[in-house]
Each structure stands twice: as structure tokens, then as C-alpha cells.
Image (tube, rainbow, N blue to C red; front, side, top):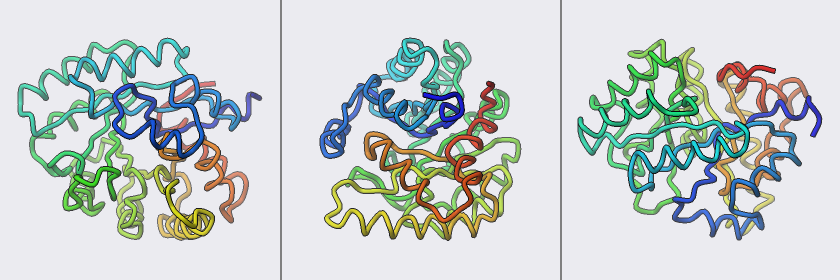
Amino acid sequence: MSEELGRRVDVHVHPTRYSRHGPTFAEKNRIEFSPEGLLREMDVAGIGHGVFLCPRLAPSLEAGLQDVSEVARRTGGRFLPTGTVDPTKGTSHIETALALWDQNDPPLVGIKLYPGYLPFDVTDPRLEPVYAWAERARVPVWVHQGDTSDPDGLLRYVRPILLDEVAVRWRAVRFVLCHLGNPWIEEAAEVVYKNENVYTDTSGLLNPFAERYEAQVHRMRTRLRHAILAVGDVRKVLYGSDWPISSIADAVGLVDGLDLPSADKERILGGNARELLGLRG
């Protein structure tokens, strides 16, 4: 893996032991469902780092943080750990999360929220201490937006427009609007365009179970390009795979095939994330 290629960053991966459907997606994509398997895919694609989004299905806050932190340590820091929290569990749960985040080793690079999978949206007042912590720690907040892979998810909580209110209130916090809000991609692009502190990622835009997969890739690539034009600033768009929902090869190929200058594609594939996360070297 060359130094130049290794500067790419995947801002959205889930190599967690606490996964309900991960092995099924991995089997469909013909990939190995393990952190080591993911690293091999990353090496082929020239990806130096992956942001490991803390699992929502871990049995406890401590278990989720242990999962992401152990993987980060044993991979020499190539996976970057994040935390998560469920505001529906109340004040004590959130206070415990904040205390754990302060003490985590290695330090967290961000927080992931799972509205839709859990019955809350980003405007929930119980999340105010979480946004305050992100502001103090100077780390981004990833927010699930759009369709859920779980049929029990509730779409009323995942409209991108809801993030606008939070982004306005918390200007010092940077937000990553995940999955381009698919299927509400135009709405998501407007939220990113309007708010300097909101980014988006390209994760989870492909469905490996689609019957006409190549046609789906072509359609999504067209929608992605139009969204980038609507955002108006390629620096606000981050590459992500949502691995193992997509293989690294397919997710990188979605970006590589865009009708954009090579420099812009490399910004999406890594340069923008390195600036957002303060990665050196």
C-alpha cells in the first residue's frame, strides 16, 4: 500500500462483534466479516483508516466502548473509535456515557447516534449534554439519517430536515449526516449546503440484495453527483462504506466512477475526512 493511497479514510464502518445482520451482508458481498478481513479490503483500496462506529446492539455502554477500543488498539490505530448513547434510557444513562467517553483509551474521535433504529430524533432535548460534550471534546457527531436496514426502524425520526435545527443551535459542533439521508437525498443536500458545520457521507447507498445491481449503482452514482452539485462544495462530502453492507471495493467504486476531477474524488475518498478528524501524516 503506497503512502499516497494510504491517505484514504472510510468514515463509516461496523466491524463489530455485536451485529445482527453483519454476517448475512458479508456472505452476500463475499467478504470476511472480521476486523482483519476489513483491513485486507482497506489495504487493497488504499484506505489507511476507518472510523469504527460504536455498535448500538452492545449489551452495555462499557461493552460497546470495549469493542471499538480493543479493535483500535490491536490494529495499531487504523480503526478510530467512537461512542454511542441511547437518550431514551434517561439521564443516568447519558451521564454514565459522558463519564466513560472522557476516560476512554484511546480517545474517541466522535459520537454516533442511531435515530430511527431507536425511537428518538436529533432534536430530543435529552441529547443536549451529548452535543455539549462533542463541542467541548471538539469531535464530530455522526447521525443516522434515511432508511434503516432493520424493518422495525421508524422513518419518522430520520428525516434530514430535523438536523437543521440542531446544527443551527450547535454551530460549534460538526455533524456528519450519514447515508446522504437516502432516500431524502435532495433534502439532505440542502441541509449540508445551508449549514457550514454539517457534512455528509456516501455510506450505505448500495443494496447488495438488489436484483439489478449494476443499474442501481448507475442510478445512485447519478443521484450522488447531483447531490454534490447541490451541496456546492466537494469538501463537505466524505467517503464511507457502511461495511459490511457494502464491500470496500463497491463503495470506493461508487465514488471512483463519479464524473468529477480526480482531485475532487481523492478529497472525498480521504482528504476531507483527514481535515475533519485532524489526522496527521
